[in-house]
Image (cartoon, rainbow, N blue to C red; front, side, top):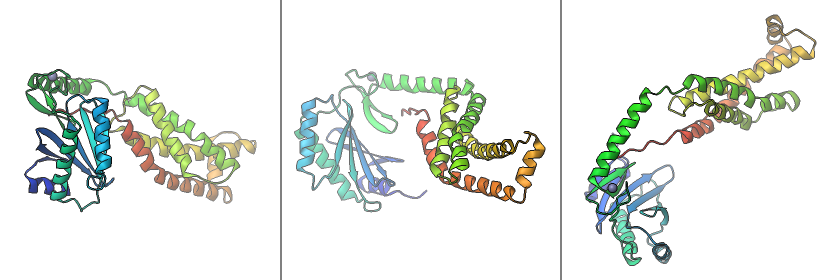
Length: 304
Ligand SMILES: [Zn+2]
């Protein structure tokens, strides 16, 4: 596997690294560092003693005063967890810069009176005796809570595996959603005569909405169901337009008349071209739909 810039930095500094996180112990605090190349952002997360509003205000003042050398913003995730974000260009990540940054942040925490964590990240009670990684972020914890949480998640995962995911119901919902979502597409095609990629996205969103309405869980396979339903929606729209043409010329809705529409020397090529353009446009909306499905997937908690 290729070494990531952060992995290289962690190696140089002797920090623990477990992809995609680097772990540093500085000033009795546990720092979880990750780098998002797509966003060009370095994230530094630290578990602290329960924060007061005054401490947060003081820390923000510190960051403003040291904007030039730190250049990071802070977000209070919970009263026990701070996330610093610093824009950094890909490849320009250097170990002196990262270690200085963590040192400067540690100084900022100290000067703001923010203490080392004494509360468990899992049960919020005092008297911690170990650390746990919750979704990769290192926090203080009780060994008992950690063991319990790991056991609970294992049990839950097993229970979910046995549970029927209602994918079939979801598939039905997705197809119905795609049909409903294709109505604007049909209307635009019939009465305006142009295509907009946004309408393809609408079919996908509608498919996803009805997938969930039918009681199905958003899982890994969902994205393929939604993509299939979206393509179905575009084909359905084309079919609906053919139906409109038949009805408009007082024809019966029988298979022979559909064959006539699609093979007619004048209408046929237009219909097929319209279908082709429709599918082509949908191809461009798929990444957006894909992201929406992924964002809706139920988050998994990992404790280590
Ligand atoms: Zn605990």
